[in-house]
Length: 195
Image 1 (cartoon, rainbow, N blue to C red):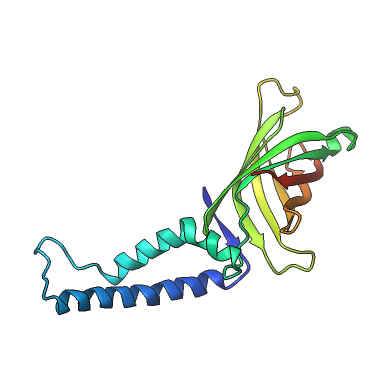
Image 2 (image 1 turned 30 degrees about the horizontal axis):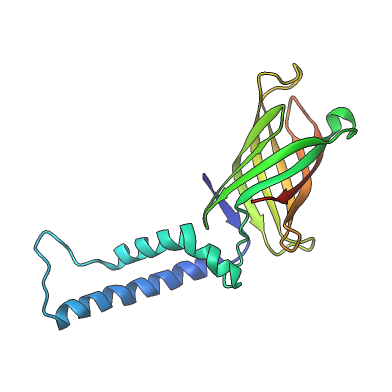
Protein backbone atom coordinates (compact mmCIF):
# COMPACT_ATOMS: atom_id res chain seq x y z
CA UNK A 1 0.00 0.00 0.00
CA UNK A 2 1.13 3.55 -0.63
CA UNK A 3 0.02 6.92 0.69
CA UNK A 4 -2.46 9.07 -1.19
CA UNK A 5 -3.15 12.78 -1.15
CA UNK A 6 -6.50 14.43 -0.49
CA UNK A 7 -7.57 18.04 -1.03
CA UNK A 8 -9.00 18.75 2.44
CA UNK A 9 -7.60 20.00 5.75
CA UNK A 10 -9.04 16.92 7.41
CA UNK A 11 -5.72 15.20 8.05
CA UNK A 12 -4.18 18.26 9.67
CA UNK A 13 -7.24 18.81 11.87
CA UNK A 14 -7.61 15.19 12.95
CA UNK A 15 -3.91 14.83 13.75
CA UNK A 16 -4.19 17.90 16.00
CA UNK A 17 -7.24 16.40 17.75
CA UNK A 18 -5.38 13.10 18.26
CA UNK A 19 -2.43 15.01 19.76
CA UNK A 20 -4.71 16.83 22.22
CA UNK A 21 -6.46 13.59 23.23
CA UNK A 22 -3.04 11.95 23.71
CA UNK A 23 -1.95 14.72 26.08
CA UNK A 24 -5.16 14.31 28.09
CA UNK A 25 -4.78 10.52 28.24
CA UNK A 26 -1.13 10.75 29.32
CA UNK A 27 -1.95 13.34 32.00
CA UNK A 28 -4.93 11.25 33.18
CA UNK A 29 -2.81 8.10 33.44
CA UNK A 30 -0.19 10.03 35.46
CA UNK A 31 -2.93 11.35 37.80
CA UNK A 32 -4.45 7.88 38.28
CA UNK A 33 -1.05 6.47 39.25
CA UNK A 34 -0.58 9.33 41.72
CA UNK A 35 -4.06 9.03 43.21
CA UNK A 36 -3.67 5.33 43.92
CA UNK A 37 -0.04 5.82 44.91
CA UNK A 38 1.11 3.30 42.36
CA UNK A 39 4.60 3.24 41.00
CA UNK A 40 5.71 1.28 38.02
CA UNK A 41 8.86 -0.86 38.18
CA UNK A 42 12.06 0.91 37.11
CA UNK A 43 12.09 -1.00 33.82
CA UNK A 44 8.61 0.21 32.75
CA UNK A 45 8.03 3.80 31.80
CA UNK A 46 4.70 5.50 32.24
CA UNK A 47 2.96 5.69 28.84
CA UNK A 48 3.98 8.95 27.22
CA UNK A 49 2.07 11.34 25.00
CA UNK A 50 3.80 9.75 21.99
CA UNK A 51 2.65 6.28 23.07
CA UNK A 52 -0.98 7.37 23.28
CA UNK A 53 -0.67 9.33 20.03
CA UNK A 54 0.74 6.33 18.16
CA UNK A 55 -1.89 4.02 19.61
CA UNK A 56 -4.77 6.39 18.76
CA UNK A 57 -3.38 7.03 15.27
CA UNK A 58 -3.22 3.30 14.46
CA UNK A 59 -6.81 2.79 15.65
CA UNK A 60 -8.05 5.82 13.71
CA UNK A 61 -6.08 5.02 10.53
CA UNK A 62 -7.20 1.39 10.30
CA UNK A 63 -10.75 1.33 11.67
CA UNK A 64 -12.26 4.39 13.33
CA UNK A 65 -12.28 6.67 10.26
CA UNK A 66 -14.65 4.26 8.44
CA UNK A 67 -17.23 4.51 11.22
CA UNK A 68 -16.87 8.27 11.50
CA UNK A 69 -17.39 8.49 7.72
CA UNK A 70 -20.78 6.82 8.12
CA UNK A 71 -21.92 9.67 10.37
CA UNK A 72 -20.22 12.33 8.20
CA UNK A 73 -17.51 13.33 10.70
CA UNK A 74 -14.81 12.36 8.18
CA UNK A 75 -14.84 13.51 4.54
CA UNK A 76 -12.44 10.90 3.12
CA UNK A 77 -14.49 8.54 0.92
CA UNK A 78 -14.41 4.87 1.87
CA UNK A 79 -13.64 3.10 -1.42
CA UNK A 80 -12.69 -0.26 0.13
CA UNK A 81 -14.07 -3.29 -1.64
CA UNK A 82 -14.52 -5.16 -4.86
CA UNK A 83 -15.89 -3.27 -7.85
CA UNK A 84 -17.16 -5.07 -10.97
CA UNK A 85 -17.40 -3.42 -14.33
CA UNK A 86 -15.98 -3.00 -17.78
CA UNK A 87 -13.71 -0.93 -19.95
CA UNK A 88 -13.76 0.18 -23.56
CA UNK A 89 -10.47 0.87 -25.32
CA UNK A 90 -9.26 2.80 -28.33
CA UNK A 91 -7.26 -0.36 -29.18
CA UNK A 92 -10.38 -1.72 -30.96
CA UNK A 93 -12.06 1.66 -31.56
CA UNK A 94 -14.24 1.24 -28.43
CA UNK A 95 -16.21 -1.52 -30.19
CA UNK A 96 -16.23 -4.06 -27.36
CA UNK A 97 -16.59 -4.11 -23.59
CA UNK A 98 -13.90 -5.88 -21.60
CA UNK A 99 -14.94 -7.19 -18.18
CA UNK A 100 -12.81 -5.79 -15.39
CA UNK A 101 -12.58 -6.09 -11.62
CA UNK A 102 -11.25 -3.37 -9.36
CA UNK A 103 -10.14 -4.18 -5.80
CA UNK A 104 -9.40 -1.28 -3.49
CA UNK A 105 -7.60 -1.67 -0.17
CA UNK A 106 -7.60 1.51 1.90
CA UNK A 107 -6.85 2.98 5.28
CA UNK A 108 -7.28 6.65 6.18
CA UNK A 109 -3.76 7.40 4.88
CA UNK A 110 -2.87 4.57 2.46
CA UNK A 111 -4.43 2.88 -0.56
CA UNK A 112 -3.78 0.12 -3.10
CA UNK A 113 -5.82 -0.28 -6.28
CA UNK A 114 -5.70 -3.52 -8.27
CA UNK A 115 -7.48 -3.94 -11.61
CA UNK A 116 -7.72 -7.25 -13.47
CA UNK A 117 -9.07 -8.29 -16.86
CA UNK A 118 -8.70 -11.51 -18.84
CA UNK A 119 -5.65 -10.01 -20.59
CA UNK A 120 -3.76 -8.19 -17.82
CA UNK A 121 -3.55 -6.91 -14.27
CA UNK A 122 -2.47 -3.53 -13.01
CA UNK A 123 -1.72 -1.94 -9.66
CA UNK A 124 -1.50 1.64 -8.47
CA UNK A 125 1.80 3.34 -7.72
CA UNK A 126 0.44 6.70 -6.53
CA UNK A 127 -3.03 8.13 -5.99
CA UNK A 128 -5.05 11.12 -4.92
CA UNK A 129 -8.65 11.73 -3.91
CA UNK A 130 -10.23 15.05 -4.82
CA UNK A 131 -13.29 16.04 -2.81
CA UNK A 132 -13.98 19.60 -3.89
CA UNK A 133 -14.13 19.39 -7.69
CA UNK A 134 -16.99 20.89 -9.73
CA UNK A 135 -17.76 17.52 -11.37
CA UNK A 136 -17.80 15.67 -8.04
CA UNK A 137 -15.44 13.56 -5.94
CA UNK A 138 -12.89 11.58 -7.88
CA UNK A 139 -10.06 9.10 -7.49
CA UNK A 140 -7.01 9.59 -9.68
CA UNK A 141 -4.11 7.16 -9.80
CA UNK A 142 -1.07 6.15 -11.79
CA UNK A 143 -0.63 2.46 -12.53
CA UNK A 144 1.68 -0.12 -14.00
CA UNK A 145 0.08 -2.85 -16.12
CA UNK A 146 1.40 -6.41 -16.55
CA UNK A 147 -0.01 -8.54 -19.39
CA UNK A 148 -0.92 -12.13 -18.56
CA UNK A 149 0.84 -14.98 -20.36
CA UNK A 150 -2.07 -15.51 -22.78
CA UNK A 151 -2.41 -11.82 -23.70
CA UNK A 152 -2.14 -10.47 -27.24
CA UNK A 153 1.42 -10.24 -28.54
CA UNK A 154 1.03 -6.49 -29.02
CA UNK A 155 0.43 -6.03 -25.30
CA UNK A 156 3.44 -5.06 -23.21
CA UNK A 157 4.15 -3.79 -19.72
CA UNK A 158 3.13 -0.16 -19.61
CA UNK A 159 2.22 2.71 -17.32
CA UNK A 160 -0.88 4.85 -17.37
CA UNK A 161 -3.28 7.11 -15.51
CA UNK A 162 -6.89 6.60 -14.40
CA UNK A 163 -9.43 9.18 -13.24
CA UNK A 164 -12.69 7.84 -11.76
CA UNK A 165 -15.59 9.98 -10.52
CA UNK A 166 -17.14 8.49 -7.38
CA UNK A 167 -20.93 8.58 -6.92
CA UNK A 168 -21.65 7.68 -3.29
CA UNK A 169 -25.43 7.32 -3.82
CA UNK A 170 -25.12 4.90 -6.74
CA UNK A 171 -21.89 3.29 -5.47
CA UNK A 172 -20.22 3.70 -8.86
CA UNK A 173 -16.81 4.69 -10.17
CA UNK A 174 -16.80 6.04 -13.73
CA UNK A 175 -14.11 7.69 -15.76
CA UNK A 176 -11.31 7.38 -18.24
CA UNK A 177 -7.80 6.05 -18.55
CA UNK A 178 -4.88 6.53 -20.86
CA UNK A 179 -1.72 4.52 -21.21
CA UNK A 180 1.81 5.75 -21.71
CA UNK A 181 4.54 5.24 -24.25
CA UNK A 182 4.39 1.99 -26.20
CA UNK A 183 0.63 1.46 -25.85
CA UNK A 184 -0.82 4.95 -26.22
CA UNK A 185 -4.39 3.76 -25.77
CA UNK A 186 -7.21 5.48 -23.98
CA UNK A 187 -10.68 4.46 -22.96
CA UNK A 188 -13.58 4.55 -20.54
CA UNK A 189 -14.14 2.63 -17.31
CA UNK A 190 -17.33 1.88 -15.38
CA UNK A 191 -17.50 0.04 -12.05
CA UNK A 192 -20.20 -0.78 -9.51
CA UNK A 193 -19.32 -1.75 -5.94
CA UNK A 194 -20.12 -5.37 -5.13
CA UNK A 195 -18.58 -5.93 -1.69
